[in-house]
Image (cartoon, rainbow, N blue to C red):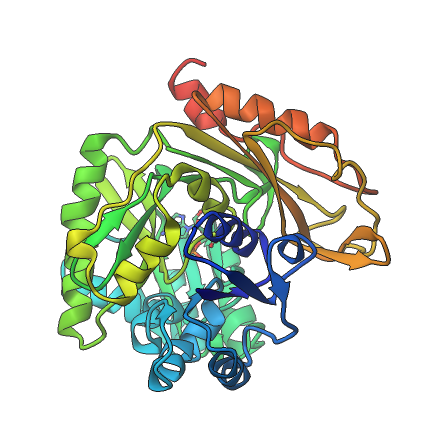
Length: 425
Ligand code: AMP
Ligand code: GLY
């Protein structure tokens, strides 16, 4: 089989690493990939947003399976375009990807079908939105309707902050048309976790629950990032909580999407807040998370290609993935300054030293420059280890992190802290 993976981050490197283990696969292509994917796949210089070019290229190359990493091509309709050409592709259609692409769509769907989420109002007029936050006088979260590269949600502790966020999104159009409408929602409290349901629209298989670390600095301080590290399974998602997530969130969401004539196929990423009233949806994403994918791949014992094909061919009812009874942890090494401005092109050393067999250094923002590998993005590496316990996985991971160097590198030293505290480890 020829497999194409679309994207260029640590998530895509992890997908390729796992797909590479399948005996069914002859060759993998990454579009556009990075210096890490180039070791396992052939990088093809086509951007994920160039949907038409990707479809033409995949057809010319007789690609048997395409896996889409990021959300933008999904919302642009890459799945329909490939399927029109008779190509097999893993991911939701653009109608189904509205679950991530439009917060208004996702929130209204949840309200209509009784799926637990924060109470909310939708506004298309900035003055009406500002008047509303002045009347509620409580902390709230202001969210741009459309995609905003992970920056579209602002947690506001005061009315002033909320007015400022509305001004930024709606009047100053900081995210362009994504901010034409905003959702203003009640602030929830609790611990966050992510549950991934791989689904063919009707049946689904859940993967181990993951906890991401979104803030830049230890102790969950500093700015929001794309994710500075992750671990799985997250013990806060007990079997009881998982049962609630299934019956209150995953199953009604899949049924609702079918009723809306937008059956959801691919991986449904449920971003959850575990509140005292039970799990509630913070957001849905229509793809694997980054760095959540990096900790999930080492925990799947089955051939990933079998799982992806079972989804594409709508036969998940007769397929269950085997999950390792192990733990995985991922520490992201980022460029100095990230998530604000940072420099690129810093040579990375230590990548050639063999890590232990349970550790993989996934590349996020890297590029080749002559015979060196250099930094090429905010998040540079996603160092990932597995172990029989979480402390073992973390110890392996940090040992590998300490042996890798580049100018300005920074990383969190407390990945997994909630699970360690919870289990007194
Ligand atoms: P989102 O883009 O919707 O995932 O939001 C980004 C982050 O903002 C989430 O991971 C939460 O940490 C926080 N957040 C979003 N919505 C809420 C909410 N209603 N209550 C509390 N925190 C929230
Ligand atoms: N790590 C968060 C995300 O992928 O959206």
